[in-house]
Amino acid sequence: MDNRKESINLYVDDLRDCPPGFVIARSYEDAILYLKSRNINILSLDHDLGEDQSGNLNPSGYDLVKYICENGLRANKIYIHTDNSVGRDNMYQTLLGAQKRGFIESDIEIYYYPITENKYSGKTDYEYTLESKCEELTRESKKEIKKKWKAEYLEIEKMVNEWDPLNLVKHGAPQDEYDCLSTQLLSLLHKGAQINELNDFVNKELYEHFGLRIEDIKPDYRERYKNRIIEFCTKVYYWFKNSN
Image (cartoon, rainbow, N blue to C red):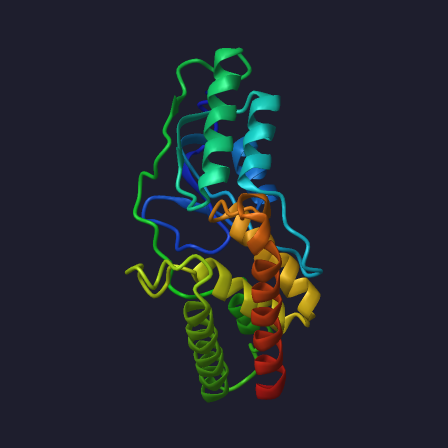
């Protein structure tokens, strides 16, 4: 530990609210800057860190873990707060393996679970972008834009829940169970995504976030499963197109 550096708790997440007592890093690159320039007491990690303006996935929390291990960076305690079960396992096992092999220090405490409650106020990267572009608009105009975004989100959340690809809502899951799908679908639509791009994203999210692979579905039902996703993406695409 370099006593000349400021000590902080670092929360790496592209969307969630920053917990009290933490500094937020919204991207892989920002997190590395903090890890190199500060002494990190507590490091809390998300896995999925959003997309760039072209719709490509940003480097993930798993990529950050690999960077930490490859470069021998340190945090006194590391917690994993992601909802992505596959990503959580990969990050946790990589950290443990690197520690056993001496790539990171042996006294670093590594935890499989979050240290804070995950909170999400509803703001997305799209909303932050909107706010920056609307600096010269009147306060009332800003309110109308935010109101429109909220209405769109509620509508797409309703469509996702009615589709309910894993029957989670049907069996009592909360209404925001598919928030990861709803939020990013709306962001992709505002970026001009086409049906095939929506389809690729949904398939990827169902695997990475919920662990559902096409290979896990009985062969007789695979085509029906694929068609259901295409039909849903088509519905969402034309809903957005007709409402804008």
